[in-house]
Structure formats: C-alpha cells, structure tokens
Length: 71
Image 1 (cartoon, rainbow, N blue to C red):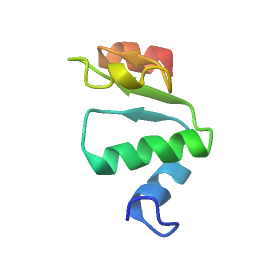
Image 2 (cartoon, one colour):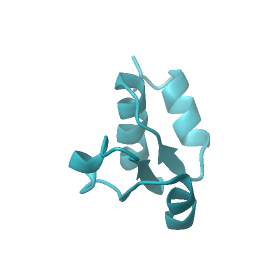
Image 3 (cartoon, rainbow, N blue to C red):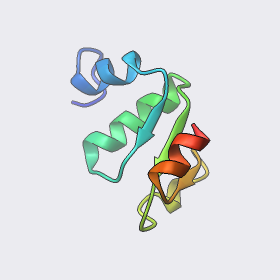
Image 4 (cartoon, rainbow, N blue to C red):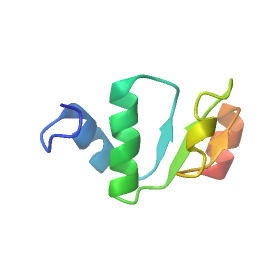
C-alpha cells in the first residue's frame, strides 16, 4: 500500500524537502498523510476547493504561484 515503508509514496515523500499536494486519489492522500507524519512542509493545491475540508491539516491555496509562495 501507499504507506508501506518500501512504497513509492514513502520513498518520494521522504526524499522531498517540501510537499505540494495536487488534487488526486488515494495515492495522493497517503502522500499527504506521510508528509504530515514526517513533518514535511506541506501545501495543498486546491484550485476548485478539492482540499478545503483538509485545510486544518495544511494550508490550502488556489494557484501554483500561491503554493510556491506559501511553501
């Protein structure tokens, strides 16, 4: 699964200095969970409100420019 220690999502998240999550499915959600678990700086790119319900976990922004500025 996406959060197994040898998973692609785990490797990508641990390799990142910062994470910007785009709208996605279960794989994206596991990367968000891992970023939070490993205390990686995280911004949720939510152009149409896809992540608004999770904005308590990390800042949600509408544009790529805002995401880059926020991170």
